[in-house]
Amino acid sequence: MFDLIRKLMPESRGAVQRRKRHRDAAEALRGELGRAPTRSEIAARIGCSMDELAAFETVPTSIEEAYDERNMAFADEAPDPFEVLCEMEDRARQVEAMRELPERLQLVLPLFFVEELNLTEIAEVLEVSVPRVHQLRGQALTRLKALMMAENGD
Image 1 (tube, rainbow, N blue to C red):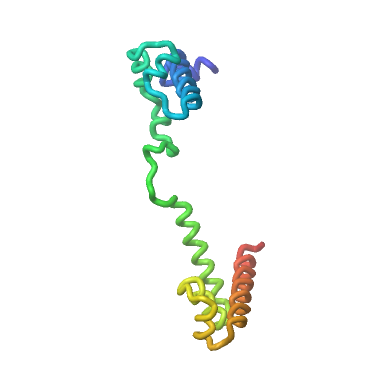
Image 2: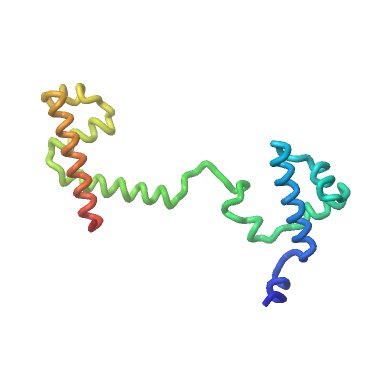
């Protein structure tokens, strides 16, 4: 079993050990110095020359390591596609649930959350008192939550 694993490894055991010594030395120095260590500081810690250090720093890594999705070289600012899809599904479910609310409650939520009107402004639009708007908003949110929970089967 171990022979098969060694055969499939892209690097020799010695190269893996040198890389581990390099990584451990760099981490230790980073902790001691409070900054990223220089190559010469790492070489001094390991006890090798700069040429030896360069030799095992440039050993090619496996393709799996090089193309790891967590590698910051492949990071971008785009949102995660799965999260975008989930958000779209949630939004569609909210719209469907809102359609089941009474007309007056359907009006309160967009005025508050989409148009970003305050309670006083909504009260003027609906021609009711501010406390009544507060009640309507609470009712709408409670019913919306209940509808969405019922849809999930919870």
